[in-house]
Amino acid sequence: MAEQQRNTGSDPFSSWREWLNESERQWNNFLNGVMGTDQFGQFLGQFTNLFMQMQKNLGETVERYLTSLNLPMRTDVLDLGHRLAAIEERLAAIEAATVRPSRENGAGAVDEPPDLASRPPRTKKPAGEKS
Image (cartoon, rainbow, N blue to C red; front, side, top):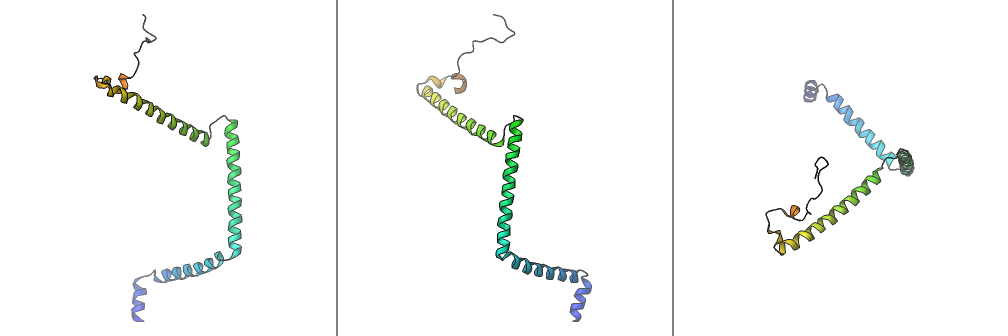
């Protein structure tokens, strides 16, 4: 008993800590009992359905608003990104197919990098120059 009084005397927050631990345990028991009932499950299911319906309505409203402003939506930007990625893949395949045969024939042995060697000659003059 004297040791317990010494511990509480040296730690002024020990009674508060004990009260906090006990209240946390009581709340934990109470809430576990409430969450274990069928009514809580039904309530949570209805709340989730309501929230999802509200989110869907908000998304449709924002979509109509952005459409009226003629702005792209998230799905439009994502579709554009997918299309651009597909174009880049096809372009890389075309570049690989055109560079590989020219190197096999010995045409790629010039000092120019393969990107510059496969380009056509530039014939158009800049706007400021006269012929």
